Amino acid sequence: MALVTLFYVSCTEYDAPSSPETGKTHYGNPAIEPTNVITIADLKTLYSNAIENNGLQEVTQPTQIQGVVVGNDVGGNIYQSIYVQDETGGIQISISQSGLYGAFSVGQCVLIDLKGLYVGGYGKQAQIGTTYVDPTKDTPSPQIGRMSRYLWRLHYKLISPIDNLKAIPEVKSVNDFDFEKDCGKLVTLQNVVLSEADGTAVFAPTDGSVSLTSNCANRNIKGATNIVVRTSTYADFAKETMPTGKVNITGIATRYNDTWQILMRTITDIQPYTGGDDDPDEIVPAGKGTQDDPFNIAAAIEKCKEIGTTESPEKYYVKGIVVTGGEADSQYGNVTFDMADVAKGANRFKAFQVYGSDGNKLPAGYKVNVGDVVVVYGPIYNYKGNTPETAGKGAAYIVSINGKKTDSGGSDDQPTPSTTIGTADAPITVAEALTRINALADGDKTTQDAYVKGKIVAITEINTSYGNATYTISDNGQAGNVLTVYRGLYLNQQQFSSTDALKVGDNVVVCGKLQKYVKNGDVTPEMAQGNYLISIDSNN
Image (cartoon, rainbow, N blue to C red; front, side):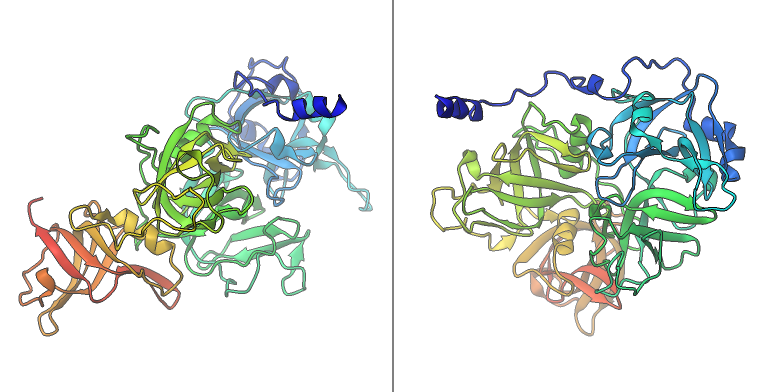
């Protein structure tokens, strides 16, 4: 009877909460109401003297702030703190508690009652906490410190999303940080290079090769005199090799006096920079999540952030290009891989433990390859507030790979691969070409010819002596996300005989192999030499 009872319980499905508000009252103080809310910027102004002089001051009047969580301890690099920001600025909340990401996932909004707490500064970094005295000092004086979890519980309330307030980083250059406005905010440093990245150096080594302060390593950014990337030796990614070349780095902009310290939250906060000389445009979210109009990756990520950390009851179609491949699990018949659009190389959506077409198990060894165009279907959510993905354990499945269903019948056969990427009649976009190139190893090129459609942005050279031309194309004819067509031939694989054969603004279709060309650490996405024009349309 005991065994029967155990079997019955183990097979009973868990009923998901019927409302997004379910469970929120189990955290914090549900009695708090937004009666005296001020902005974070106004709070910093009121207590600027304490912050600037590394002191602290108790909040004695009824005062509240509300905002969205943009940083937590999920990756081990932020210690016993969360960061909250509103439309005016960000601030650190110091709490003597681990595992804060459970209740305070990125994107969760919170209302904080400040009366009885302290506002102060450490290295001029604004913090909310309580009073602390360092017992190791001969003449200790009170400073801002972490409040107990029990005190914190009385001072916060989880609340529903706030209109127009999202945990989306602000793109910054190394030259436009503002100590007053940006401290404590989530930012992305775009198109930067880590000075010490040499292909082997890790973020935070413990072998003595790097000087540590408070068990943290500061890594420099080329061209930046007062910005470092700060990583704890206890971070999950401390021993990860720092990427070389141009990258985008997302993290919390904290300060120690006049030095900016960027705190990455997880390893996914650093991504390859995939733009040209100019900053690339954001991919616009598109699609309805339906079979006829799937979400693109940007839209899927946006939807996941809206849904939050609980799996959606609805199912959605998501389409993207595979950027990290996967192989089917031999026991469970599912596969995990990442998909992307071209959005500064940072937009990633994880197809997690998905089955084959129609929900069938995949045969052992079945591979989903980098560069495949995949449509998946199932529930989606923002795992731990940081990873947009499908619900796992077979809740989602692959609809198609490169337009074809998967072979889920148990054979070892793979779908017949396309002989080309796109066709003359249905070429891929420049954005799709760039994503495929970004997935290649440095110096590699595709084995298949690709048909790419774009508009000429600039012409480097039309050489009638050698009969080839070098020019750049993009989807909209603007600089940014550009593909270099290197020493290509004219129509019908003929040589160029006139320097007037092409002009800026022409719409063209080009055929050739895609290549990730690297020289002196700089990456140039290009169509390799040997390509040729399929068509030219001068009607704009």
